[in-house]
Amino acid sequence: MDRKSREYEVCLCYHTTRGEVEDFIREHGITDLKTLCEEMKIGDKCGGCREDLDMILTEVNAGE
Ligand code: FES
Image (cartoon, rainbow, N blue to C red):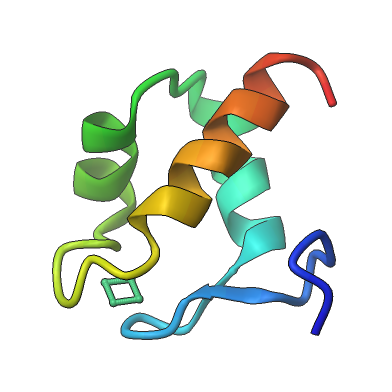
């Protein structure tokens, strides 16, 4: 699936979609990866999604 799709499952360990992450970042004004992972309770198992999460953070905060 396209990584830009809102349906893209960014965190496989917690079954969290890109759309859910984008909405959470906007609603809570998240600007850093550590806070995002702690507050959403994602990204702390295998860690394989962290790079993608960081990219989403950058994009949302850049207004994309
Ligand atoms: S894919 Fe997110 S912690 Fe494993």
